[in-house]
Image (cartoon, rainbow, N blue to C red; front, side, top):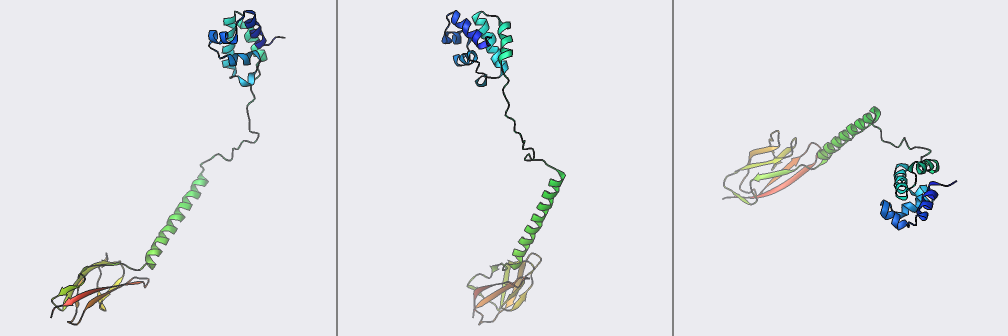
Length: 207
């Protein structure tokens, strides 16, 4: 029983047509023609493409298209599809209300812990203070020194052991009594956690 490949090969040889010549006539690569003649279906395209090749070859060789197509349908074996016996269905991502709840709770816990950590770091951190007046080595003509600056909110500030009032933003502006022997102002700011920062600012009192 002749295969479709044998039918095409016999017709080609009978007409004295080489593979290269048949390739030129049909625009089908001779490698494909050889595979069809050898019934090498595993290394050929899918059936619709192969059937188009066979129709083209049959027409070019002057043999019955209906006959070759009938034999092709008999000879052509469907390609086996690679099927995973255990499909990895569980590995596919699936958004569910339970997952959304877990992510939401986890995110909330993360935010709360982050906020508490941030507040704790602020709580145990030494307070900062910025002094805009007086300047270092500033000459003071009176026995009252005007001080001005800003420090950490909710802290307490003393200058040469004299308490200074802070506003709600930590700003301060006040006057400190000094005498002619005073050579520096000692700014001491203490946070709620008991952490303190000390800055000394030298001044000169005019005689």
